[in-house]
Image 1 (cartoon, rainbow, N blue to C red):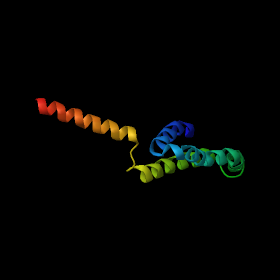
Image 2: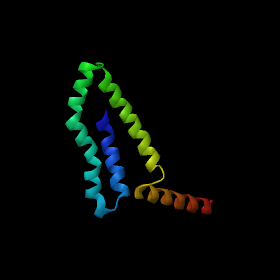
Image 3: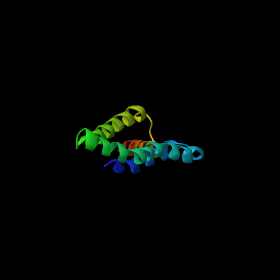
Length: 101
């Protein structure tokens, strides 16, 4: 389930970052998932064996929800250039059609 958000996050990130900073941003954005892939199996196994069998799944769901909320909170006001261009084109076409009608 976590992998489903990666293409959206990467696309948005590449849309709002300048071309010169894209490689650095992509590298930094992938660090948390790389660390999770390194330590996740160990922590998940420990939680399943010593605490509760379903705890790793519950923790993963909670972390995914927190991630989505934080992403929205920090980036809600930043629009990618594609959205800005589309919005201005739609506004211009609306103005042109209303002027003729």
